[in-house]
Image: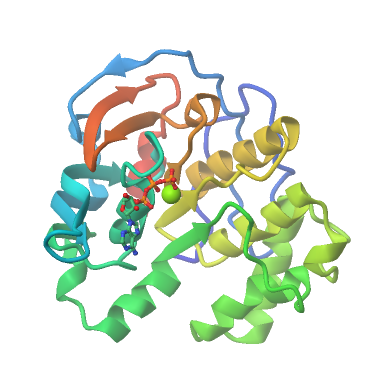
Length: 293
Ligand SMILES: Nc1ncnc2c1ncn2[C@@H]1O[C@H](COP(=O)(O)OP(=O)(O)OP(=O)(O)O)[C@@H](O)[C@H]1O
Ligand SMILES: [Mg+2]
């Protein structure tokens, strides 16, 4: 896990919703704007877009079947996917097509019925459960639709708890978390409980929690689904920009094509398979970001 400051990124090219980097704790890279993506992209075969970048995650021939014969549901049915650091991937498709299942299999939460997921070349299924849990804590960040903050904890405590569970001291975790919270525009709100925050602010705390450990991959399942359009857009920009600036790969499930358009790539799933992939060449990670970690 890399906790060192990351190299700078390209200067802002459009509106930036991310405040400037804090003095301590969080990566020092300046925020960049998210170029607006066109409605259509360049079709391409699954995995083809990441050929020039080393994938942080590689899935091959993934299958996931729930239940037994007769009642079996084939949620994943032969998925191949690569994603590189600092790249962003939206996963779309109708309800029940396997998006959440794919996210959970990629994150090592669910063990696939068949196929492999490699994280930096290591097969997740080959790791002992404790090692896989540790990897999830240290290298993966998660953002869900409703943030899933613990209501009895403050914003700051919500962010530092998983870090402390991962073995980081309270002092280090607090310095880091304060930096990230400020960077995401939550100055003065560190001591508030989730009920004292707006939906957008709470979701920014959830993003802070996902990013505080400098993960190599951030998984987001409908991260803006519970927010109004304007707040959702602001939260989305922060999520995409901070992942890209810190060199984390972003894998985001969404039903909304406008949300997906913030990502460089979009895959559309149907019946457990990847049916289409689109690439937006104007939403690129820099090569420096992609190889820096
Ligand atoms: N634990 C489970 N046991 C049995 N079947 C399941 C389980 N989880 C999911 N499924 C089934 O697997 C299929 C894929 O589910 P999944 O949750 O991955 O879909 P999704 O694309 O995320 O849908 P949505 O957009 O509604 O969230 C569905 O048919 C669902 O009913
Ligand atoms: Mg789902």
